[in-house]
Image 1 (cartoon, rainbow, N blue to C red):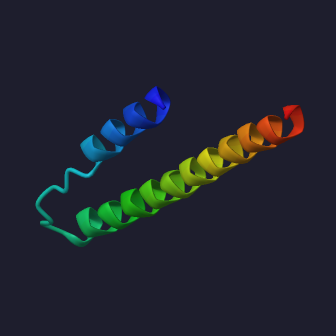
Image 2 (image 1 turned 180 degrees about the horizontal axis):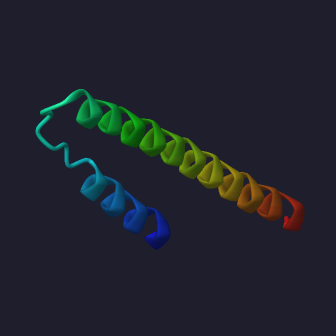
Length: 62
């Protein structure tokens, strides 16, 4: 659970949006948001995989 808490803090820190003065800045923010979304999806999938693995192990051992 500590891993996910640390990742949550890391994600909060990445959501700092600068002032958009040019199209390049807007494009960079879009790219950053897409990468951030991809990381959240992967993190969710890892969480579900770990939960399924623990659940499988508990069911098998009982």
